[in-house]
Amino acid sequence: NQDGGNRNSNELIEEACRKLSEKLNFPFKLKTEQRNALESLLNGNDVLAVLPTGCGKSLIFQLYILVVQIERIKRTALVVCPLRSIIDDQIVEARGCGISVASLADRSEVELKASEFELLFGSAETVLDKRFLDILKDPDASLNRILSVIVIDESHTVEMWTGQRSRGKNLSTSGGGFREAFGQLYCLPYGTHVLPITGTADNETQKVIIKGLSLKQTKRFYVSPNRPNLRISVIKCKKQEMFTNLEWLIRLVKEQATATPKSIIFCNGSLTDIAAVFNHMLLQSGSYAYFPQDSQTSPNCLVEIYHYLTMQRYKDRITNSFKGNGKKRIIIASSALSMGVNFPDVRYVIHWGSSRNMLDYHQQSGRGGRDNKPSQALTIYYGQQISFCEENVKAFLRTTSCYRIY
Image (cartoon, rainbow, N blue to C red):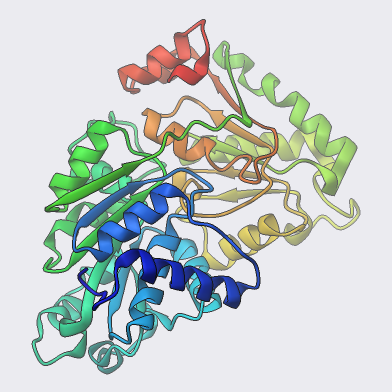
């Protein structure tokens, strides 16, 4: 046991679970894959955990910290996340578990060197900044000595940005300024254990993650992303008929207003597509797109846009509304909304145009039905849109058998 002293890892894990149950005031039991991943990490292995929605990936590194708390060993884990919204959610969650936590972006160089925090969160860009890399390499910095685990959240994005998987040419929604730094994470001075976690990674992606992050003695834990509560449907139509396939959703807005089932429309083309769908929804819904109808202001609009260029305060307004029971009912989004954000009760996920690859498809579809209630994942596309898709996506769209085999 790397950090476990004279006690075996199973005993430490059980005590950490009891401690967390008391803190949260409800009992829980680790899933087999969570326990095995945590035990492997404690035993000194690099661990790749591919666990779908509902499997509690973050519990692995949270319980790791609780274990070293029990052993009274000073350790810090660095968690690299692709989106600020994920970082904010994770910080709140970790504090609720009794873990001292901070964001790299909010701390001074002196504070980071002293490393009084058990969990540090940062984007790939922040982590790879020269200021922070110099601290990691500084033998006089406390962080240099006590950093024991580097967690790569949503690690499937490493594959996308290392260029080791061709995704076609038209990628404007995933876009240039969004996540390039994730492909440079191999530059981190690894000498600690590494824990890449993600909800979606096929065998090819897993190999790329392991190679791209230079993992050693890697233990892999994989659970299929199949979600029985998701009904999967595909509609192929002519280009000029695309918008007619949204009439049912517009009808729901008119009839149910703020009771409209929460829905996300992922536009897999360009920002222009997002704008076109948004304008269509507003035009066809008219005053019904607002609640109350006589107050047609942005905060009262039931339909919103979310992409990587959306200002942070608007992103926060949208996500806070969607997490609770706010007025926002339909979000028209890029892939920026497909990672890490936990909306429990999204009933419809609409893929406006086909996803470029099955990883993107699973990530986007995974926003639906996270409360395990019946939900739908619907793809609406016309023929030319599949030109830049990987072959398994083309096969998925063309199948006449069960869609779940993909």
